[in-house]
Image 1 (cartoon, rainbow, N blue to C red):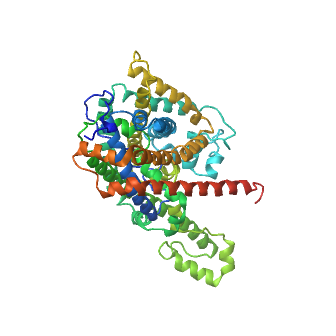
Image 2 (cartoon, rainbow, N blue to C red):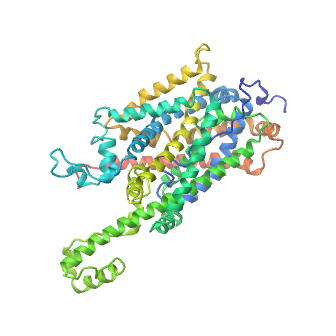
Image 3 (cartoon, one colour):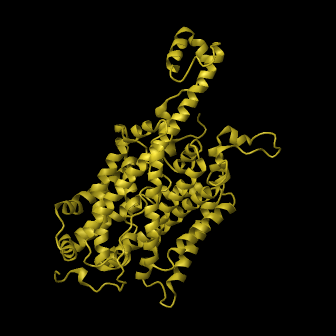
Length: 540
């Protein structure tokens, strides 16, 4: 060991139980594994972010946590008192992300409880109060949208109209926090056992979905959409920010949880091997999970595409007195071109729908709606829809629960390192107080305006703050503590010095890329604010 190295300091006392660091879910829960934007071009910034940001930061966090055996606050305070705020920032981000992340788990529980009904409650419109017809709001939209926006969220027109607490969401949120707490009351050993279930079960479900999805009509269209690059997408700085955010979420970077978990590993553990295995397996799982999801989205898009053309076929058949079944999906384009050439005015008067498969695919692949609108609509079109709905939401809950382990550990461990917990308070009691506090604050998401608040948290808490924290983490290790001293410490732990890839990314590439993404985001935010300022809501 190099004399004078910071890592020679006596570490915090921790148990000898080895705990492999666990990444967050391999896909954002609300996105279900879909890449933001849905195009194959997203895989390019995703791969670049993984190689030049994700893996270097993952290795760095595992190394410092494993050797110092402290949480994020203790680690950065040890490196420099001026950098202690990094640990506090990670703590705050972990706490805030945990608030809205567990609300998403509450939504998943709500859908899971309703997945046992036959027919599924989002597959039909409810009757009106007089039982003389269906609810008008549902008929004007769709059963899936109505169940999500009215039956689940009971959403208000805007964020200024708060609405009341939705008691069913309050109960689901309380259930979600109780489940998270149960996994913490016996410490890291319990978390380790729970993660074996929450990590392995989604692989089983994804494999089942994969086999079923590949047999659906239109699955190939979804896969082509997934892997076909749209190069125009790469010009959008938001895509690069989304890629970096996806990597940070999936690997739990900058949350502080990885540092806390790795502090339980033996000091001679090969953290470089762990970083490569976790990073590569995580990315493989993301791609593997995307295949059945996009295959099902292709199926759903094809169904909508065919419904659109069938509606046009019916209009053309009635308007031109064509015999039934003369116009089919196979010869629709031929008939349309023929009729449009012979009587264009009549065709124009029918106001036919524009049916474009690419448009239906574009509408299927982004945001919270993927899990709670698009995918639920696809499920009801599959045979045995209740079984697929149950499996899908159990899988999502398992993924989200494993992420919550890291988020909560990223809050608890720094508080222990700050000595903010009196020694006479059992960890079980303090963990319960943290969960109770989080539940109380998160009640804002159960209001009628809760979805608006959650979108704000998701857009601003879980993206740029992580990149800023990661940037200063690298700067602290490389330029304040000293990269050579850090290399010496890694050599003591693993038996060899970091190679040129780690050296180049830590010293130059990773901080430069994080800075570029940050500046691009500021430019994007400036344009967004200016557009909002110049927008006249009364213009039509």
